[in-house]
Length: 109
Length: 112
Image (cartoon, rainbow over all chains, first blue to last red):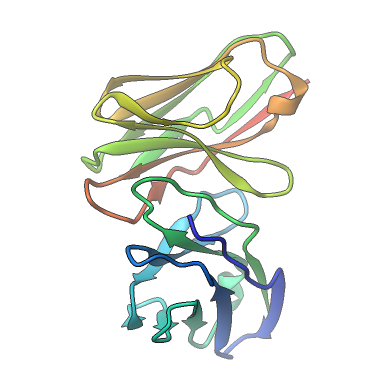
């Protein structure tokens, strides 16, 4: 499973766009990039997944450059309720899953 | 309808006791998992079950034993509880061929 590196924490204000970047230099050909969100006292929640280029859903966008050695989760116009820990996972999650420390996003009013 | 449900939500018990945590999923997923989240918030996989067969067994103490009576249930039994077992335990499931997990809300285990 490819090791990932993400910022430990980020601060933002309501209404701003937040971009969280994850580095995964050792990503393998078959690896997918998946992001999860975890609120206090809850289990992680699937946000978005991609393999290459750009993926968008109702919650976020995921940008993946051509070399796939990094990815950026983009949260448009965050609100206070987006305060959570965001995990970047890379690999064939059907085989094994290791969650890193994640990025603690704190949205201020 | 809760997709992945765990019981109990909170569990406080004394050292040396044996306890079980139950998990049920109504998503029709093929694989179920148990994760442990420690005080530093790292999520570590403990077990996974696919069609009632254990396919991943991480290096956890043999005091921990997963039990799956059917595809929709994966229970976690813990013998001789120790202080270091205190953590939040999450159950999760995944569909066949899928990469996305659905997690339960967790069971906070406190061993005193």
